[in-house]
Length: 206
Image 1: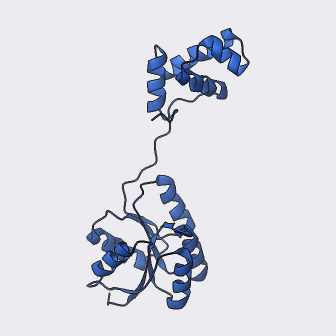
Image 2 (image 1 turned 180 degrees about the vertical axis):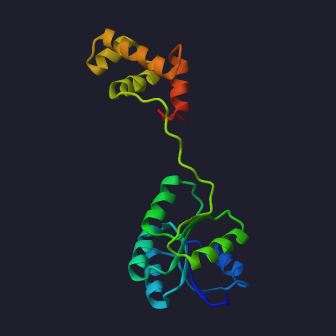
Image 3 (image 1 turned 30 degrees about the horizontal axis):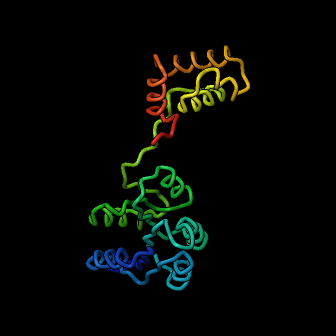
């Protein structure tokens, strides 16, 4: 491939834009424009019609995914690479569903970035995930709404009697919920139950 791929860099940090620009100097990707915001990026796309866009998701005036949708409506053949410091599987999945060509971490080596860019320019509509980001495994433990409420109160140190008052239940019913909760979490006491609930992702404890 000759040095002829017009490229737009979209990132609100000048140092990152400059670094990518320098890294691409000896490649076939020619940086024709830069943008530091969503509105600026939209204007640059309309002006230059780049074939390759390197895009940060977190922009000061909106999400980079809005640019993905805008570009896809104008030209489905444009390659759009998401560059991000985050490792969010939800973010990755949304980028894919919105029509991005690839998802690459900013910490990736330049050689990897170039390799992904070359794949994306050939097949802009085939998503490339150049990360090791995986979805968080779902908890094997499934709680009812009442058991979830009981677990939330368990963390506070509330007694069965206090839980009964707060949940407008009988103490016997609360004790039944606790027994089921301990069984599902394979816990013998409150401390084990809280720890295992945290490990299962059922609690957000710091």
